[in-house]
Length: 193
Image: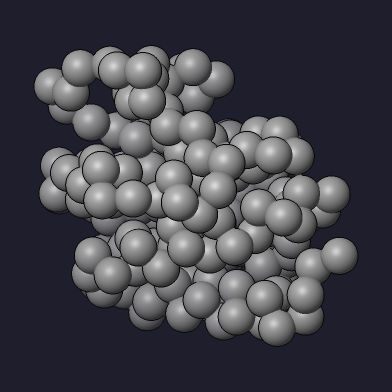
């Protein structure tokens, strides 16, 4: 069972990251969230991906902002927190790993935004640089976008992430979040500007 305090801390962390992105939206995208919602209400979209593609191609938004606007335009703001809780239902033992990864990436700078999706959480600076996904009941897969980094036994090919990431690291315990992994995350963060 997910501990209430863990869910509250997770929700607060996600709310802060989401609020930062919403606050920066007018400067970064040219419109406020409400202005984007009004625009999208005028067009009938069937799927989330259609909204994202529209915002990226017609309005030149980054994937992070397009995805966030699409999510928030179709549901209540509180639903994004529920996406994370849904991902970890039956995988509650992985929540401390997820929280530690968020703490690490949030420590890189105020420009980091975690955007929950149905199966994973996209970690974005100007572009996505990491993806956190509870892949099994015992493992989180951390996808990374790294340029010019060779594959190793630990820093694998992106696997199930396909083109969303270049590399993947399998994380089964908090001890797997060591200086080497933090270094890869930091490098991906730096390359995403």
